[in-house]
Length: 440
Ligand SMILES: [Fe+2]
Ligand SMILES: [Fe+2]
Image (cartoon, rainbow, N blue to C red; front, top):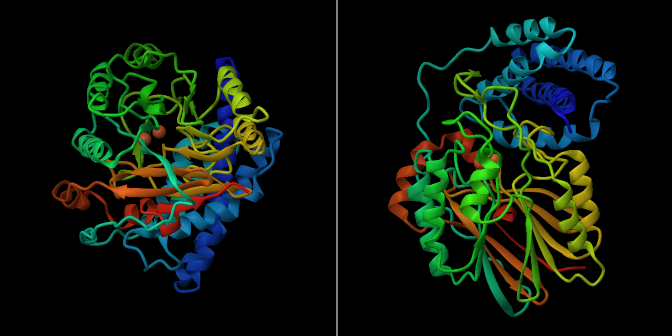
């Protein structure tokens, strides 16, 4: 895809995402208006905003993604609550999602001015609390008890985003690596975002830390690994190859008869937007790094074809980006491109795939099931609930568990970094932290 096509494609996905967000916000406010009639105005405002976006989608020969609204609304409600009083700061969070729309979309559509005007009208009614609520207290996250289906043949570990270079990243990665070394894992798969700003020193720190693993490991590129902020260029391909000894086109490994298909699902292109800061509700200064959306390259499609080959045997697929339909924020734009999600789906339909694991979202979450085959997002060491995953593989399937870091002093002091909204976002319910799978 050339850069002009890519830009047009991204704007399509941006507008589609914004329509889903505004339609879901309208429904959420309708629920909230039942307990607080002040939110009735917001129902109409979001509805009109969705209408404006739909008109621009029609002009671009695109249709709104009605089938994504329920999943996105369920996600929004799971974070923000069923009524506006349930979760501290939830009304601001839901407004920030609208502000994200206003910050990104208006320049690309007719009616952008009206969109912003409506957003500001709703925002004018928001009243910031006099003081911020303290974060909830420390409460350890115990592993969910799961029974592996049969005799365990081996255990492997999943280490999601590390973000070397950001606060707490190195200490928490070290704690996770110590736990993995003590776990008996025979292989560790890291899910990308090794670095925070894609810089040489961060790559170096990640490489040195991972070298402390006692067992073989495999990594991949995440969107944070693509663009070096220090050198202000797309250096990721070069730095990744230098540090990890392979081009970022994915790889298939085999361990005890099970395939591990690792896909570097990043787009090697700079984001047209600076970073958006949800706390301040504005764009950050400087470049925005790489495009957040995921994509698979032709060599990665070949790896999937290898996984899908008849008689191919069991395989796990690992990638940085969760596939569509992706119920998180922003919908569509933060997940794997539609066309590649379709390719992944076809691979799973071969019957050879036992599970798909993604990072990127920093939460425990079941993205979706493909006739019982899970596509699953894995929480990270740096952010609440601070951990990694262990998978016990048997002849008849596997058991998955999310494990909080065992360094209680480190973890308990990090709890204050996670407010009410983040904890609801990232913890995941019990089924997202422990489950079993047996092929049909
Ligand atoms: Fe990340
Ligand atoms: Fe990411």
